[in-house]
Image (cartoon, rainbow, N blue to C red; front, top):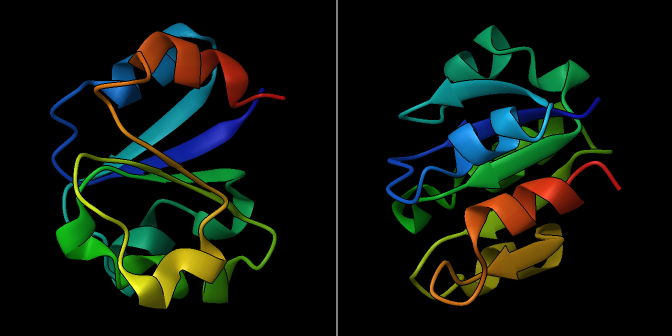
Length: 106
């Protein structure tokens, strides 16, 4: 089972799809160092960001867990400063939440 943290507004319900796929999910609306620590980022496999206004949370998450896979599931463009730390960026208009969730464990 994969453990994921979903951060942001999650307007496309990716957290629900991840849970429905049998993975453990923690949710944070506002991703800060404190909220990521409270959700045990160190023991997390995948960090899913759904709101690119919070892109600065990606380096914070990677600092706390360098082995973390980062997935961005959002409409907006990924800022340049986090491109190298992001493993996968997906547009919700092109990728269904259930399909994304099914692939997280692989």
